[in-house]
View 1 (cartoon, one colour):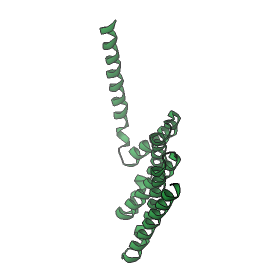
View 2 (view 1 turned 90 degrees about the vertical axis):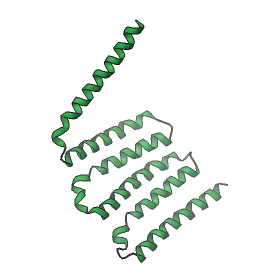
View 3 (view 1 turned 30 degrees about the vertical axis):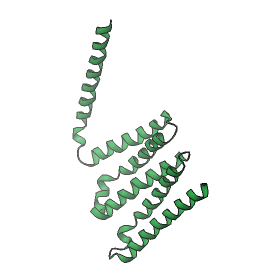
View 4 (view 1 turned 90 degrees about the horizontal axis):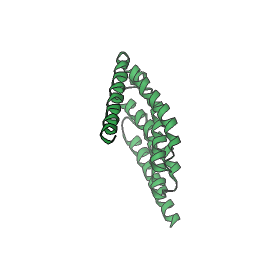
Length: 163
C-alpha cells in the first residue's frame, strides 16, 4: 500500500511541475513571472507527503516555509519588487509559520512556540515599523495594559464570588 501512496504522490508532484513549466513555456511572461511556482510545487509535495502518512509530520515545516516564501515571491512578481523594502519581514514570518504548522501537525510540543514566537514577534514588529506605523507602537502597550486589567478584574470577580 505504501508504494501506491508514494507513486501517487510522485505522480502528482511531477504533474504539478509539468504544468508549471508548460504554463511558463506557453505564457508571454514565461518563467520570469512564474518561477515562484517552483517553490510552491515542492511545498505541495511536502504537504502531500504528510497527508499520505501523518506520521511524517516533519514534512509540514519545510512545506509551510516554502509555501509562504513562494507565495510572497509570486506576490512581488505581480505587484512589483519595490514592495520588498517594506515586506522583507515575511522572511521571519515564514519559519514562524513553519514552527506553528509543525506544532499543529506533530506531537504538540510547547517548545515549538518559543522559536515561533520570537521569529513571529520580530517579523510583526519589523513589519509594523517598515510599513510606517512605527509611531503607533504605544497603542500596543495600551491594548496589552487594558487586557491585563480586564483579566485581573475577571479573576478578582470570580475570587470574590467564591470566597
